[in-house]
Every structure is written in structure tokens, then in C-alpha cells.
Image (tube, rainbow, N blue to C red):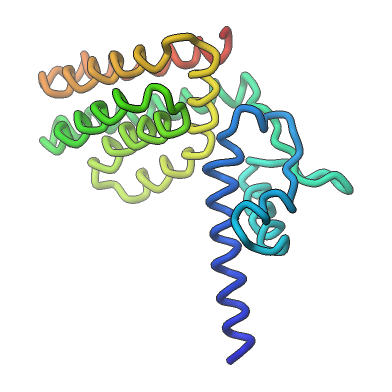
Length: 215
């Protein structure tokens, strides 16, 4: 029984470490190009270094960190290719989501509008702002009812947050621009004009891509 308890504690510690590393450490622009201190993370979340190492192995398997012998886990900045591929994949999924939900009448307009309102109060908090930004787009994808597609999109979360926070730091006033772009997307979805909706999504992602590559 004692062994089972220890295993359960280890799993919960690993999961806690995994979520913290993925959503906090990897999303911090200052951590890009730096090594993660296992001890610092352990101290911050109150676990031993063992679950930290286990979580880092999971993140390395997802290609979110690089494990360097005798040095530890390295947070490599997103390359231009990775950023371009991320935006390309997002575009494919989100445009499909717009077409599918508009065709079936399942666009979550009210919830998307509520998230935009939340963003208006988070312009001074880049991390929270981008988390709500991610929810905005994920909500549309989830509304397709395609669980596999939703799970695939959810797998982009860490990269989305990393890229989004960096974009906010690179372009002054980007928060308000994002809100405006989200307003255009929702207005197009509400109008029932599929072409306008997919064009609005494309324009939003293209603008973010340009900020990330040229900002």
C-alpha cells in the first residue's frame, strides 16, 4: 500500500511539474535561449527534483525542450520555420473550424465575445492575455465537435502561448490590435459570410506571423 501511495504522489508531482513548466516557464520570453534550473522549479512548486526530471522528459519528447548532457534542459527559441509551420497549421484548422461551425450553426459567438471582453481587462498582463487568446481560438475548434481535431489543436497550446507572448513583447500596442482582429473574426462569423470569416482568421494569423518574423 505504501508503494502505491508513493507512486500516486510521484504521478501527481510529475503532472504538476509538467503543467507548470509548459504553461509558465516555457511561456516566459526571458527563458528563451536559457537552461531550466530543476532546483528553482522544484522550489517554486514544492516538489522534489525527480518529478521535474520526469516532466522534462515528457517535454523533450514533444520537442519543447532540448536535453543537453551535463547541462540540463534547454529552452530553444522558436525558429522561423517552427513559427511559420505553427501558423500554417493553425490556419488550416481554424479556417476549417469556421466553415464547419457556420455550416452547422454551432459557432460559440457569445462565449467568444465574452473572451474578447476579458482580454480588454488584461492588456497589462501578457501571459494571461495570451492564455485567453488561446481559449478564444480553441473554443471555435472545439465547437466542431471533432474530438480528434480538438485534441490535435490542444497539442499546439505550449507553442501558441510561447509565440503569442513573444509577439506582444515585440510589437507595441499588439494587445489592442489582437482585440480588434478578434472583433473582426466574430463579426464575420456572426454575419454568416464564410469567406469573410476565413479571410479574417487568415489576416489575424498573418499579422502575428509578420510580427514574430520581423518584429
